[in-house]
Length: 164
Image (cartoon, rainbow, N blue to C red; front, top):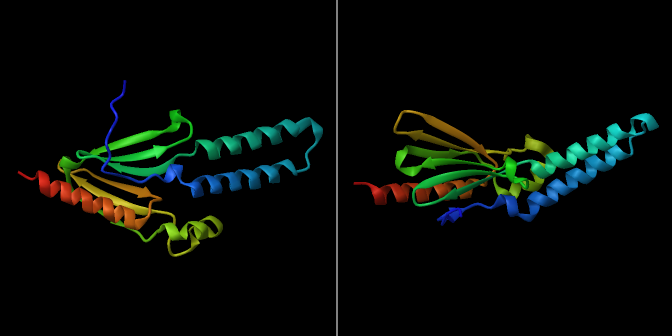
């Protein structure tokens, strides 16, 4: 049996209603558009395969989430199909510095959907981490800037508490 983790904080964009409303809207829009395309009877199966692939893509497409435990920052790319879910773990003790940038907020989600990243909010914010071994990592995340700021603050508080 897998050990259940206790999170200090976790974003949960995968389970938010807006994530699924957008996906269902895109599936309906693209699916109906493909179904009304006039094609010869001999190649109708191509249309249905295309619609199936579009539906599969939007269902399987991973969504960014972050979780924080006492020891680790977890970057969760959650998919409705578990096989496509991926979790990257970063040890907090190994971090020298962490910071975030960007101006994407949850309030821009509706604008992003209809306008793409043409607005000033954009789709992504960035977390940049530097580790003790000299490596650095940059994550582009579609997570609200305020939530990223909060996570970075918690990490710095954890590092202060665990300093020898």
